[in-house]
Length: 482
Image 1 (cartoon, helix red, strand yellow):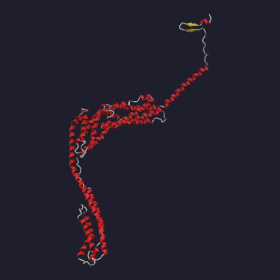
Image 2 (cartoon, rainbow, N blue to C red; image 1 turned 90 degrees about the horizontal axis):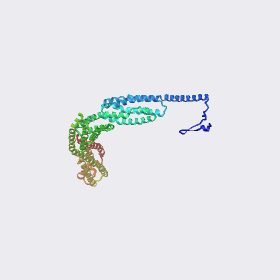
Image 3 (cartoon, rainbow, N blue to C red; image 1 turned 135 degrees about the vertical axis):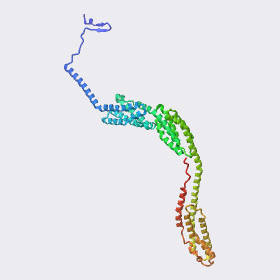
Image 4 (cartoon, one colour; image 1 turned 30 degrees about the vertical axis):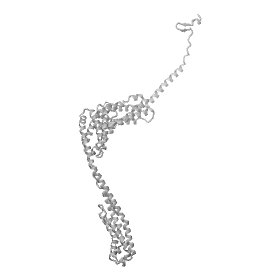
């Protein structure tokens, strides 16, 4: 049969032929050996490269293993703490653990690389969380204050650790997956703190009532307001992250806000008390109603009695101020009047300075000019009148207390200037004949001879200043200590 006849189509669409298939020639033995060698070398090279990488990253693996164990041990203790005492004990582990993480960081080689940098950032973030947990060791000292001051920092470090964990997950997902759940541990710690905070708030509310009940004056109330202000920020911060217990803290924070307003209550200003009273009553009752402890019951029972006691303190302060204010106003008015009188007296005396100098100069000029009694009598009369007027001013002045001696010195000085013209006029008028020389009068030689006024004024000025200072420093009725 011919070849063409052997070819055909089999059932199912398959073809057949009687021709021998053409196979490639067998490979040369030497080529096969070369190919096998290349495969072996490639495998060995990959293994060597993998080994080098494995060895080169050993510090990263060691640090990750060590730091994760240390961090997980502390977070496990924090998250499993069932009461504040256990949480404080867990937090006490944090400082030593942070030191171990610092030692782990010191073992990382400074070779760079994204993975090594991510590991370093993660360990550093874990150190931050541990440092923020450490203050919780002092929970027994006062959960409200300790948690209030620690919470903000703890929240910030948990957020920072989440960012570093995400960065590590991008380069080493397996390592990131082995890290403990930081937010969950902190949430469980907050729940543990919450139960203690409710009790602590009741104690703090009772302490606030103690301060108000012990107040006897508005100064005592202001001191209680200062104490409330010191607690207010911690109480407000402590609300964060506490869930259902935050409501009690919110009410107590509002009560502290109201108590802080007591710093503005004085005997002169009591109008703000009614509004503060209403807020204190409402918020402290909310605090007390949130718990069924003995402390809460005491707050509920004492609250109306304490507020009534504060009512009496505020009312007494207002009454005392109403009695004091008129006396104070009168004393201030008297002080102002006395200082004004001193000023008028001083102005009057100082104005005599120029007048007495003019009198002395005129008297000296008259003495130098001379003449008969008739010639000088009219001028002597005028000088005598001026001298008597100046002396009258000093002799009738209302001399302030403390200036009496210095004022007497002024009078004596003025008499030495004004006295000779007065006496000379009388002598010329009655004892010296009209045509006789004026110098025959016994007092003629004394006209204008003396100038004692500056010396007297120099002694008077300090005495005047002392008198004014004494009036200015005069004790006024003190405000009521109420």
